[in-house]
Length: 212
Image (cartoon, rainbow, N blue to C red; front, top):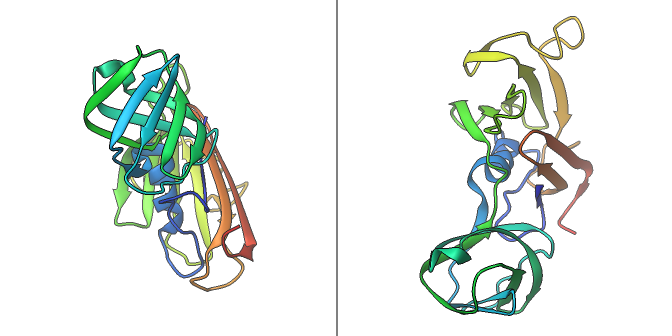
């Protein structure tokens, strides 16, 4: 499972003054990843990969990272951060001992979903790419400062049109609510979003401001 927190390097800010800020965080977690950095060296010894950066580059221990662009290619792929201190990062690997070269990039990894439909920066529809799951559509309307509307659909043809919505209008007209903040303010709130290949969890401390 991948996760993103407000205090991770490169993580988008969620606040009460920026429509679309929740979608920015979901884009990073579900689709694109975030916080990419290029190491100066990557070496492997006894099942441990060590990346060294030109300057201090913080990574959150246990978070999922994705390595790309390395030669030989065995170093590429997803792993969990084992340690991060100063300008070094380590993770467990099955790649052979040695020094790896190429245009290597390391970023926090996405959960591997796709963004099927969107409208500007304030509406988005996501879908899991895991064919073993139900692959329902996850629609987010983030056009209001303090809250977003979230709804699932069995099928969708565009960002606003779908069949078999859940919750239904009889349950919650227009879909469910996610409170982003209790104040129309540019001050960041604390949050934790997590996802695997089939599910998304959203936890926002809407009344707590400032990174911690």
